[in-house]
Length: 394
Image 1 (spheres, rainbow, N blue to C red):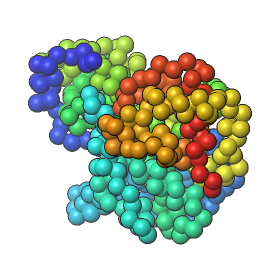
Image 2: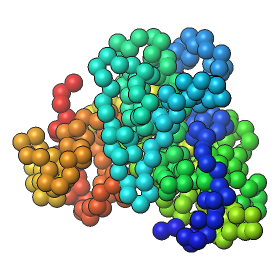
Image 3: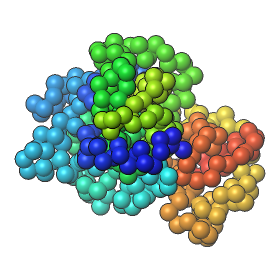
Image 4: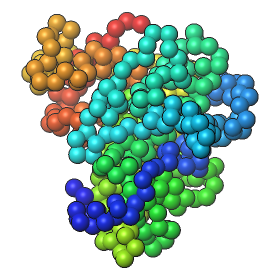
């Protein structure tokens, strides 16, 4: 629940901005890319370097850190003229997941599939960051993707995987993702809430992307790196969305006479800490995306599932009794009783990046788009074993 009053919010929105920039500033994207570089396998790192070395686009230099800003510079390159590039790709940096009523299909324009033969870079403008990360990930992984599109897909991934971890990119309270809410703090120049999370809190960690990346990598434990190197774009977005609701919009303070909400130092410190966490997660997961795409041996698809201890039959019975109201749990089940847009379990099992680690993090954590389940550890392992056995053979 937000801590500012409705009257205070109304005043602040009237004083606020009418739009927002693309997610993470240049420094934030460079930090994510440099963290990812640290976690790339040697083979994946060589392939990324070779692809970027083939780039002739003058918008950026062609090291991994500079290329991570390319998608923003591409969109902004005609923002004040024809807006062709801007309009075609602007929404790809967002997922307008409502803070009070999270609904992924609604936030992602219904999540239409790309038409057969359509390149991800030529897909419809009305698409969200969740779906674009998935599409570009698939293109980089597919050896049949042409060289030019594979390079473009890589450059978008270097940017969009960072975007999906910016909490205000994927959480909105009908205030332009915080850009219409003006804030001030004792140690930061007044601005809008989106800008604080996008720029000011990144700057507060440090001014040099390489130094910040090294600082954050040093804090990532082996256990965290292992846990974060899993999952799907939708799970990552939901995780960031919850942080947006709890920590970005869950701010305290009172308006000053300039129409700004004055944040206490504790809120600023919490914001800086959260931004550091999300930059770290984004870097580890960007490496995970590129390693799985370019060096599959770095993450054998079934390695984590080989030692599963759950009972598949018990997991199926539990899922049919608990989850079938909303999901098609088993291929032989009829349509769900209440919701037709919830993914079926076989689709979940075959989602790129899905693993027992990702499912465990999801089942035992908060997930705002559905009721929280209270499963024992053994029940959770049973459900995970059942879901993963639904994978189709490659």
